[in-house]
Length: 364
Image (tube, rainbow, N blue to C red; front, side, top):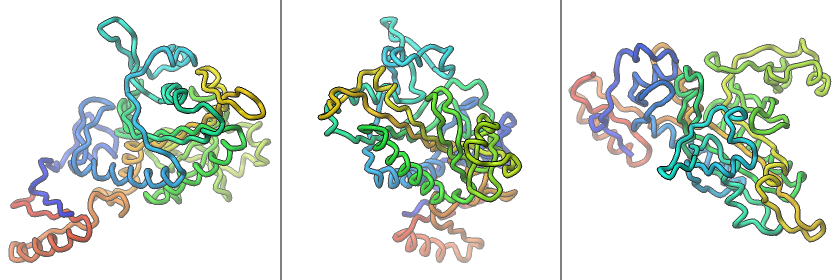
């Protein structure tokens, strides 16, 4: 495909907005990839959307290889399903955006989707023979973040890929969890971050009372602190870096070193608790009615976009990895005398690969 820069409405600029301090957003705004609406809220412009779509394509391939089916849930959230799991109260989950219908009924805007997806599954999963079920979606999430100062790495509205697994029992869940872990590592390898992304043990936060796993990419602009093993590719979030965790893992404190990182993905085991609370049960031939085993798996698509901009850039600008770049080739005519040849070359090449051709009359 051929993209002619003269057709793009976006403009490059020499300076980023004075109120934008994050490197990733500064670069992306200057290059015409994104537009800032307000703190923590950004628009994605044609070239930026191309990068996002390339990331989504990679994620889709890996999710489909796991047997996951794509869905799209509503952003509007039914209060009742969240009350049932005690995650509606702002004292328990402090990132809600909430509103009301004209009737006065309270609603929320989705920050995650375990509850509504599980409720939906009650209409489709009746027997153990209906399991396993794996579903995923790409959707805008809204979180009322107190601080939104890291560009598109921490937004109040962002694109997430969230996947949910429904398994017959813990053994079946564990098998899928391990496959999903590898699929996530495949994603980060394919976008160029494999060598600096660590599967990191962490607390479950507001998601689960069990330990979870984060995928942390080493990045000076990251907001997290992790401890990386000096010899093994093992990492621990600072939240659980304590004597008990080290003893359980058979590690020594001096074997780890502190690093700054950005969380680009996470996976959680919910067990049967949430399905019990919401009434998702199946009839088992041997055990009768039993709750389903739930897992949750997220990748922040726009955060990953921001991390890539942080990592793959220098003082001259952005240098995208080939798999996510908005085009495979950028064609420029440095002299007017070769413009005709450059145009013909770009058109011919555009029949085989994605080409961005700078055919503008003057450089902005």
